[in-house]
Image 1: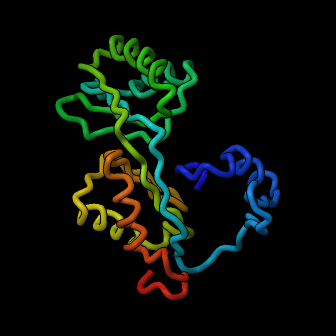
Image 2: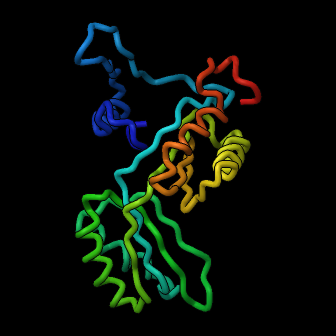
Length: 209
């Protein structure tokens, strides 16, 4: 959740805790409430959708008209790595007439140096152009067992479609499905998915999930 928009606790602390098996105690700085213990959880047989998150701190960059040949992606992303740009989601379109488009997301505050790196790489690769888009949001569905329940992705996509929310990029993992949408529609997307997956109910009371 910290990697997909939840601001607390810091993502780096969660990474270290997971790596070294450290239990995390998350508490409020303003009350004496007991807070929440975050520990490793045993695998569960059924998929449990635990949260919907959104992140509006990213931009999307698209490089168009890239020659479709071996080594092109490496030539594009090596300069980005050298410029210390943290690339997240990557999508390459189906090649048309020997050329393709490559899109990726990155943090807002790294867009300027990414633009400089991509501009130089695009010129050397013979790309037809590139564009940066700051008005996107990443909406993510978090849960255990994503790969064992194909209906989760279908329900997510159907829900967004029903609200006329276009999906621009998709990425998946064992515990997460993320979609890039327009930033102006992020809150609507979160509310719609929250309702579709009955997240206001206890897991055992949810129907068909």
